Image (cartoon, rainbow, N blue to C red; front, top):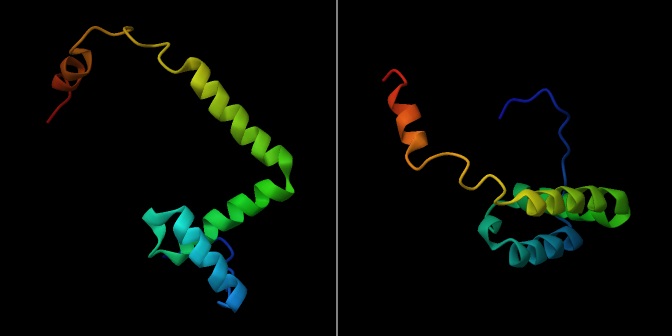
Length: 89
């Protein structure tokens, strides 16, 4: 896929292969997508060496949990369908 961002080549050494196998067990939905597995590994590695990064992610999740359901009942049943009916086809 074309991109203007830098790309990085990674050789599958025995250590990288072992990490990919472990990642495939952790993220089975991506087991056949090594690029995604590498991104998962990089994200988790970043969190492990930069605790503030993990804290920021946890803060976001906690904020979402706090507001979850707070807008329930704000709109009448069928509101979305009525709104969409007004859109041109």
